[in-house]
Amino acid sequence: MSRLRTFPLLLALLLFSSISSEAFAQPRKVQPGKARVILARERMAEQFDTVDVVKNVFKFNPLLFFRGEIPLYYERALTPNVSLELGLGVTLRNYLALSFTGDDADDYGAGTEIIANPSYHVAARIYFVHDLEPQGFYVQPGFAHLVYSKDILVRAPDGSFTEEKYRDERTFNDLRVLVGFQQLGSSSNWLFDVYGGVAYRDRRMLVVNEQLDLQNDLYTYSVEERKDRVPAIFLGVKIGLGF
Image (cartoon, rainbow, N blue to C red; front, side):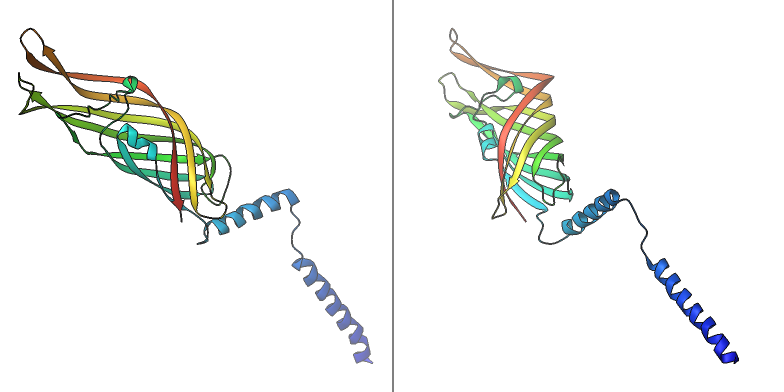
């Protein structure tokens, strides 16, 4: 008789325990909007860390050759909308005369010896849209250091060159702000980067002036030291390969 009485009690306890465990196993309800935002960010972070996503880019700017610089740029994506761009190059003969920025065209003839110097660029790039790969519209603050050097040979009265020379040197330190658009190819990792912007340029220059005294048939030289700060304007395009 006692067994019959305890059986309903045991059945009730088992039923209660199963209901309680199922209730505690139910996930907590959260606002649907917040759940979607968290999942989207987590999913993008996971995809950003995969090996198939382009996070490194090597680029060059063929147009800068005419301004006397040959740089190679490396961009590294740090987050889905922030990257770091570094540039290392060399300055050579300048073919364009942009006097308001201190870029005087170099003489093509004899008597001018171009001296190569390294150039440096460093910038942070902020993309306006979150993307797994470094592309889209962006703003880029940065710094650049350029040095253009050349030796001017002294002319003798008959017009021939002597071994005496004067050093002409232009040192530019730029604080630049660029805006642009970078796009990866739809079927390859080649890309283009179109940009424009302005800079606050600190100039320190040793400018060699050559003059001919017609009365005495004599060439005279003077070295003028200049220090000033001027604005500079930039417009260009880079071509690169991502990996």
